[in-house]
Image: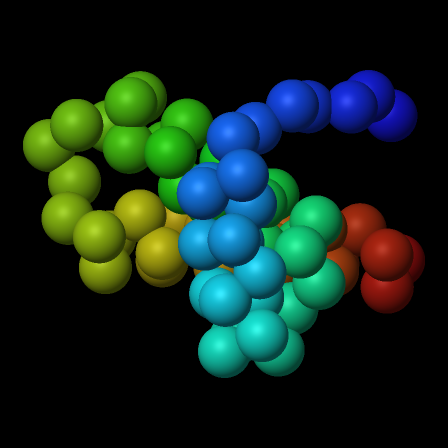
Amino acid sequence: MGIVKICDALHQDLRVASTALSRSINAQAEHWIRLGMLAELHPDCTYQQLLRQLLRQEQANLKELLQ
């Protein structure tokens, strides 16, 4: 695990979004990082398509845990 330094304004944005979406600040940051990585890898995809891909990845992880 590492430490990522971000500006105070972005940290405040994370705090607001995490509260609104019932996530921890770290979970919200991870979500935005994953979404951003997918967006850079698939610039032709819509936001909804990227979210579907994230959900498919989570389902795959859950299937591994249930085996």
